[in-house]
Amino acid sequence: MEKQRAIRTVIGSKPTIEGAGVHLNRVFGNNETALFDPFLLLDDFRSATPAHYLAGFPWHPHRGIETITYVLRGEVEHGDSMGNEGVISSGDMQWMTAGSGIIHQEMPQGDPQGRMEGFQLWANLPRSHKMMAPRYRDIKRAQVPEVGLENGVSVKVIAGKLYDREGPARGIVIEPEYLDVTVPAGAEFRHPTKPGHTVFAYVIEGRGSFDAQKERLVANGSVCLYEDGQFISVSSAGEPLRFLLVSGRPLREPVAWYGPIVMNTEEELRLAFEEYQSGTFIKHKV
Image (cartoon, rainbow, N blue to C red):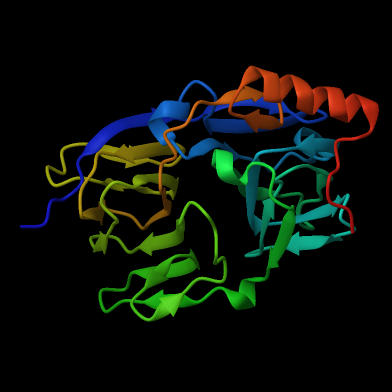
């Protein structure tokens, strides 16, 4: 008999400031690395105040991780040491694999009304891939399949597969799933999950029940981390519910993390910053 995943914990996002002064809400970070393995960090940068985001994230390095930016509203200009540059806007995503090292910048611009809405997720790379060649994927809204279910549930498939529709983010080492799910008022979404994988849901609109008991409602701005199991079942309350459903294969490796660089040992971390200071950080050029 299949086992439904129970809720392990629910965490509310907390305000913080990053980059050159960007006000955002941190959903989880370096205090929860064991809980969310292989995911390291999730930031919610939804804002209607341009002064809180326009300073952006000027040029900075990354090594040993992947950064995944998903924009709901507004625009983000980006550029990196591999020569990639451009703009992602509403419904677009960038999936950047830092690998052995990349230097980039991300500058939020907002929409004509001054609104900026999006999320950045960091995924760890295993020891075997920490020093892989960097790569960058610019995923446009039109590339993301949207699946409509009979009960009115709508699912955008960014990574992973729903029925016969596969998301455009493929060939990623942690075998991720990344879905943007909208559940109408009073409807239910049941979805299979890979046993052993870390699974969490981050609510971005409304509120709903995320386990079989349906005794606790999880609301906008909170993340629900699941126990192990074969499937999840989510029901909306008296209003539409929207959430990001993310899963991946845990690495179960030591984490040495400081700022934008995540390695396995303190020595590897020290070396990375020494190389950044000496100008030898970039191992793979255009």
